[in-house]
Image (cartoon, rainbow, N blue to C red; front, side, top):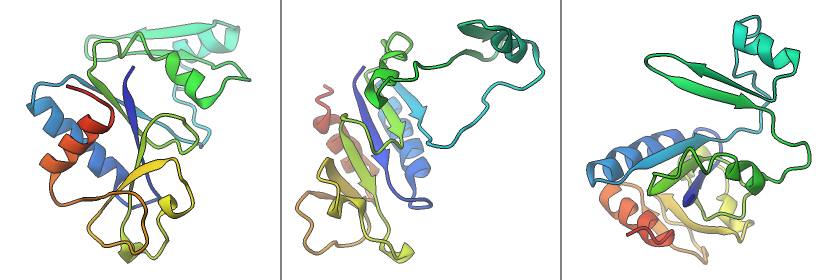
Length: 167
């Protein structure tokens, strides 16, 4: 699974950037998958509903099939690394040219940061050498990596495709 992570601090525009990249890349004919990563503990399945009860009873994997949406729930291995957990998605994303992941600063996969000066925080890229570019409307003095213009989604899409070697 080819993936790139869109990271940044809260309210810097990660979700909006992912949405815009999905629209642009799918309009170009690419098949794009997305994953939302969060460090918060969430119950994605509804407690008390049948699928949740199946998991609580001990099912290793639980699927939900509807006419409009399907899902599979499983608990990752306790000792799995961040990148190991993405491998569990590989089969579901196999037909995608690219998977955009919103979040996950701990991965070894390529990462770009979205940053807005107006929010008053320093770019993560100033202290995280694993970030490969920053998407911004602003200039960042002393930045050792490329700063890509936030205003031009066409250019951003080209840069993302080149970074992860998608043709």
